[in-house]
Length: 266
Image (tube, rainbow, N blue to C red; front, side, top):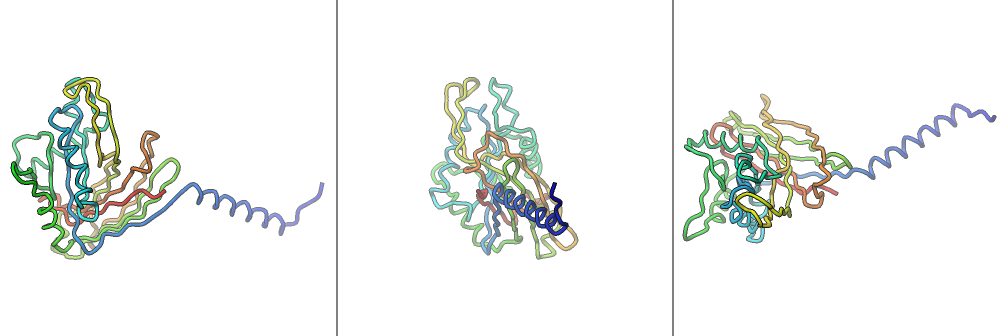
C-alpha cells in the first residue's frame, strides 16, 4: 500500500472542506433588506375561516398592492384567530397566539370586545367608511412622517429552515421607552375549500397569512434590538410566496415606529 505524505493529506482535507462549503452554499440563499427614509405603516387584519363576514375583508386586503399600497408603503399581516373554530370548522391558519395578540390590542385600545374581521392601522382600530374607502389617504399620512426606527434584515433560506438575523434601532432616546421589535413570516396565494361551518361550500382565498410570529425583542440601553431567529420550513409552505416582515411597536400605545417586508430569497 502506498503511503500518503502529510502534505498530500492536508491537500486532500482542504479539498474536502472546499467541496463541503460549495455544497452548503448551493443549498442556501441569502439576501438583505433595509428600511429606508419613508415611514411604512403596519396594517393588521384579524380574520377567521370560521367567520362568514370575514371573506370580504380578506378579499379587500388582497386588492391593496394593486392600488399602489405595496410593502414599500404598508406592511399587511393577516392574523387568523382560533376562537371561531368551535363553529364546525377549524381554520388551518389559526393560532391561539394571534387571538392573544388581538385581545392585548383590544385591552390597550380599551375596546369592550374582540371581533372579526378587525383591522388595526399602526395599532389603532381602523374601520372603512360607508361611502369612502380612505385607506390610501390614511397610509399616505403615515408615509409622510419620519420613521422613528431603522430595521435591517439578513434572510437566509436553507432546505429545511429560514434564518433571519435582524437589528432594529431607535435613535431618539425619547422614543425608546416601551419600543419592541417583532418578526413575522407570511405567505400569499393561499386557498381553502371549506367543507363545514359558516363558510361551508366556499373556496376562500387569502394573502398576507402570518405563518410564524416571533418577539417581542426588547431594546438594549443603546436603543437597539438584535435577534437571530430560525423558522422551520413547513413542507406545505410555498417558498415563492413567502415573505419576511419586521416592525417596531410601542407596547403601551400600539404605535408602529417603522415596518419592513421583503420576499424570501431563493
